[in-house]
Length: 402
Figure 1: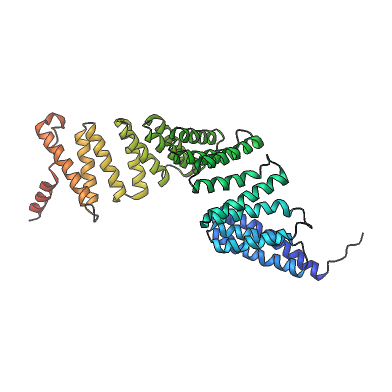
Figure 2: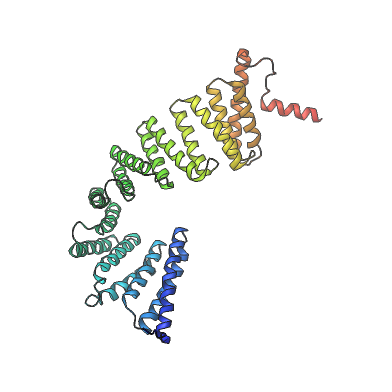
């Protein structure tokens, strides 16, 4: 069959539609990079393309509804509420006018209503948000059924609205229903389940129901580890879990949670990384709190090497860790080593302004070690001369210069 070349209007339409498709792929790249402003600019361009396609070339007007919705959602993500409301409202009105001619508009209507509800909620209009979300849920159930997964996003938004009103019981009801919908659709092991556990745990914590909050965060961490979801989010949940366990004086499990976070960060970013170092620092402090001084010392010594690589030997952060190591060594009665670490930390802190309080504290510890060693010389290696206290050392250096 002979193929005839497209006429000029059809060729223009095909080019515009292809450009719109390519821009959709570009948006996904921008979203992966976290470039929200870039996404907005692309969505503005797509809206302009869709206006030409619909108003000039008589293409399906539903694409204009989608373009307004996408742009409104992008504005909402960047907290530009006025612009978000403008485009989402335009989308809702146009979509409503297409009910009788385009079948896809009805389920999409509930999506727009949900986004509008979220927008009012974030902008402070809680009551307006509830009205829109309840309408979206009722409409979605009538179209797709009570147990359809698409209801879950509406329940999630309603849970956030109830939390904002401090009605934690109803927020938990919504999240529980959301969880049941996901579990019925995907099963117990699915990537969508841990975020729901996290949300529920937060609400329980706000209710001061710490045991249930801990239980749900444990489920989230364990499930993510079982499914090899080694994301930074898993580490963040584990760190929060550790904090809650420490509040309950459950130090062994708190330590396990921090170890899990450390493992994830090290896997994702390596040992020499600020996130890994921060968790390792928390592990040191927890071990000290639990009285596990030898184990704490091992962690601090590892952290010494990490801080040296990250911040340099003349940084305050490096000096802070030296001071902690000196304190642990002092507790362990390893006075010679403690003195060396305190003395090294002191030399670094003297280079920075605003460290007088820390300098005074270190000098007191050095003097305390000297006093103890004079009274109990057997605690020190007598083959080497006892270190002077800092003030005396400075005076002797001055005399030598004279």
